[in-house]
Length: 264
Image 1 (cartoon, helix red, strand yellow):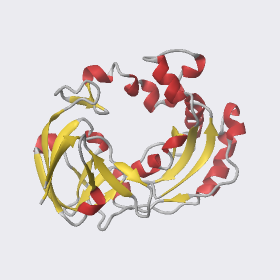
Image 2: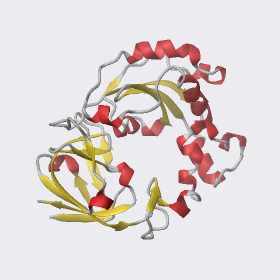
Image 3: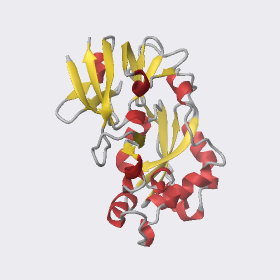
């Protein structure tokens, strides 16, 4: 059976283990049901997530022109400390920016390849942690806007990582950490503007992923270059599909590509 559509990040359901869904325009696949099956992925064309045109994807699912125009790809998305909606100051689209920036945000610690600090909207918990492949995470600050979360993250980056090593995460070469202890150690470095929002009493969230075999030497699949790939699906972690031959496919990094997936 074959399915075709434009890739967007897999939707998830927080169960133990996590359930994954690949959602196309007119159908969806429960990816957990494809574990232990041979599937073929074929590149069909590009389809920008904004304009819908068949133009090479530049970043985040957008072609080059759209990437530098749409508010969903503005600098404050990746660098929340650049948010300005709380000042009533527009970057690309103030209505959109107010909608996204002026809502509760969480500064968190997550352990995927190592303990890292991150920022996400409150409504994206625990989805954000799942997407990063974190097996444990904890909220440390809840603030009313994205700017306060951003400056808190910047302050804490001097004392804890802010990036995930994707290879280490996929190999499951990780150790359990006491995130409550990490939270207490980092409390002193929270900026004055955000100190009142520190979360005193909470516990770690633990996440289990549907992985039956972790790759020893992960090899990233470039489906545009290779055009077609067939492999036995043995796991899903973060936004990666993991195959028996150590090939891994980052669904989120390939947003905006139209693919055909055949269950062999």
